Length: 153
Image 1 (spheres, rainbow, N blue to C red):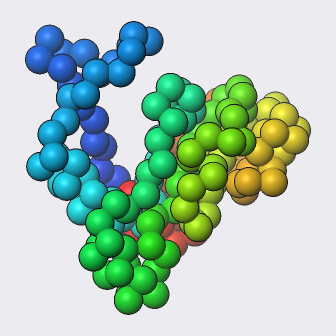
Image 2: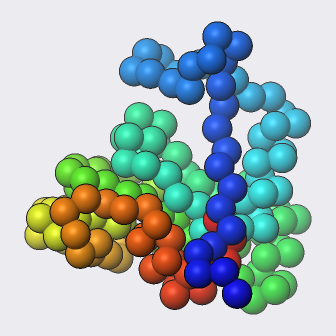
């Protein structure tokens, strides 16, 4: 049994090789791609995004297809996967879509130095998880998620 969840990285890249910047959002996907992402999302136990994505894109991170939500609930799962974000500064808006949409568990991983800020700002809308080290280490977070029964994200 692997010590970490199976992790699939999904991102859109422009033809000139850019992932994104601070300019207004440019749609890089089409309906077929949105459907593919929704299918992957439906099969996942969790979705992890960085704090910058929460701030700039304000994602809902929900399974969109009713048939896929029904399939998940028939299996005893929530309609959409758990939401996870990683933040060093903990300066996220508790009213963002990440926290206010979907009846799913929301986890915020942050460093020991920011726990007080994270709990004050986000404690009512998410579970704050401390990474006991100076820097946020994704390998350690993945190991901890496996302990929370996240097999695929």
